[in-house]
Image 1 (cartoon, one colour):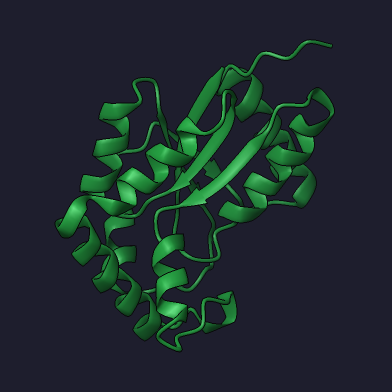
Image 2: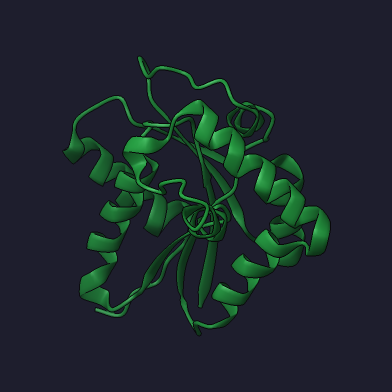
Length: 173
């Protein structure tokens, strides 16, 4: 079975950590977890323009550049959506975490994959970024929110609840 999760939140809220925890939880059950971002192919292309793709280089100016390229690609041939859809189609099963910031792009995935869940990971006391892509995060109506304000163990418990209760992942013991 395929489970589609559109994961969002401001920078440094713990989205990737949450996905990594989900991978650890599902690994013993041989259920693959995929962590895909609609911006990754843009980062790859930008790297050829001598713009680094590493997290330590995620300045507002770099994020704005990626956003501009992504929006041009959306306009040209809906590339970011097609990239995600193609990657989902390559795998017969698994949990797919899709990082998408733009409201219109999120709605395309929801329409294409009925049952997709929109998940926000939030965290107090995290500096807000103010670029165009990040401002979209607050405009999305989420199905669920994971508050990442406690310990790593608490986040693991929230991940287990999310996977098995909210998402309904079924495992064979």
